[in-house]
Image 1 (cartoon, rainbow, N blue to C red):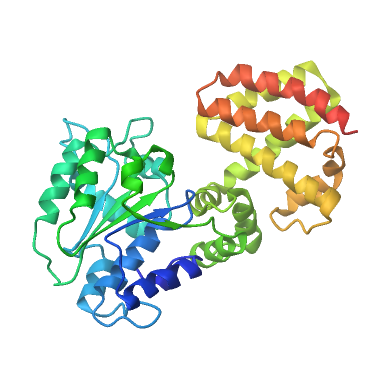
Image 2 (image 1 turned 30 degrees about the vertical axis):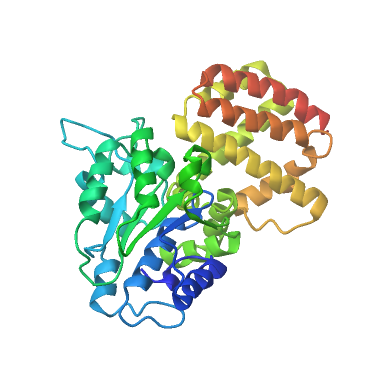
Amino acid sequence: MQFKDVVGNSETKKALIHEVKAGRVSHAQMLLGPEGSGKLPLAIAFAQYLLCDQPSKTDSCNKCPNCLKVSSLTHPDLHFVFPVVANKTNKVGSSKDRIKEWNEYVLKQKYFNLKQWQQSLDEMGKNAAIGVEESRQILKRLALKSYSGKYKIMIIWLPEKMNPQSANKLLKLLEEPPESTLFFLVSDNAEYILPTILSRTQLIRIPSLSVDNIQEYLTKTYKVEAGAASSAAGLSQGNMAEAIEILQGAKSQHLFFDLFVKVMRAAYTANPIELMNVSDEAAGLDKENQKNFVKYGLHIFRESIILNYMKGELGNLRDEERDFLNKFARFINNQNITELMTEFNEAHYHLERNANAKILFADLVIKLTKLIKKGV
């Protein structure tokens, strides 16, 4: 994987290349940023640049034996650590036991999150972690002599999923790293990482991707219409992994739109039977789609405000959504927008924590009857 294959992050790419040219590559670097910002592909592209035999001023050559091995994830000096669901029956105790599945998934889907990784393994709902067995495997792998004569590189995806024993062993490695060994820690959330580990890494902050970057990538990679790519990019809020999921579940967007229209009409007419019917319909979605529906509502509210007050172009909408908003947006204004956003954000918060969906959506639609009336 080359830097040119990584969406956005142009300034970060320049900074990483400058490290190499200046001969100041830190042995431990923390790529920290929001989910879906491209940290993992960036770390792999940096590893390829470091191992490349003929790097240019801006990228690896992608032709030398080292580049070809990295791009196929078969380079002996490139190692991965990632959360796994320990399973004695399937003899899974560390990343080594899932490396085949990992390589196949990364080569197929550069941008993904932990939920999507677990879904690919049919392990949703199970606790994925980086455990103490992983620490033993790390020591074994790093004890091997470098194949290329260059660096040994270990990419640790989601170090926040390390248990305390594993984290403490990693700390010792960072304090006394093996010769010519580099650690790239790729994290969504530093809050759950030992402060002593953070203090021993060079922090590289990775920003969310722009809507334009995401839209361009979706259009080119998935060969979809600009409208579909734009809608997915807008809904994703800078998260490429989520944008891909939204695009691949385009049918869900139509489902969300239809349900949202029903909810708003029921709230406007305040018909008790219709209100209970639509709340039951929302509660009948699977857990992920319940959360995605609430996020979809927040997206429509934001677009309504843009239309009403900023006179902005509604570029993140499909035609059916745009037609609906031309009629509906006037009901979303400064009289109710704050409360609407608050109620939907709180609904998402409680769904994340396994609230009873039937009660939650019944309560939400009843509150909507008052809030929509406030905007009339």
